[in-house]
Image 1 (cartoon, rainbow, N blue to C red):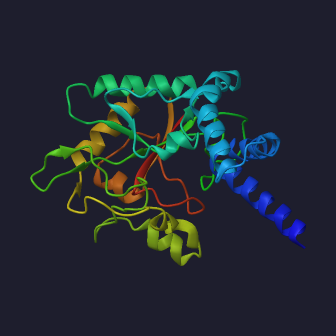
Image 2: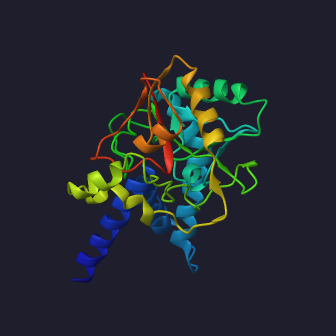
Length: 266
């Protein structure tokens, strides 16, 4: 019985690590093998071996191999940063080179403002159609989520966020705006506002949604011919007066997009 439980626990850990980071499961199996062969005995040996191998692979090996699969790390600059560095540590920051170029051109367009580009989940480094859960479509290197822009009560744009993860703090519809959220929930799409459970804690609650800053960010991205689609909740499209045909509604089968912006290449 103990052997069966041990096998089951290994399978569960392997599966979870693979789901959240793509390479974590394989690194886990390798760390078990090395720990077994390593004759030294000390507390937390397996954990230390796993963390060392994982960080070495994530920071040094994976970036070298990913281009073979047509992907590369998002290039961080003075104005392009991950909202949450777990995105980087979990290998969820890989994109097609054209998407890096789009971000760079957007950065240039925003150079005379104080608006920064804070990215959320992109794609895993390897293999098309490998799911990046909980997303439905981040599986080909061409998709990326971006944080909304916020401002202080005296209308100064800030690059702070309202949750630790970057997801889950919604800019809900105003009374006279289209309320697609209620429509989807009434139709039984219970997952539609699921990101509210993925904040990992709310912060900077005094900040306000910046219509001016978010619209400037979106319009700067829409200036690129390589942008295929941009998903945002209908009431924000209405509020920001966005008329470009590439600004689309993502459908009730996804999750609500009034806590982030989704962009994808053609």
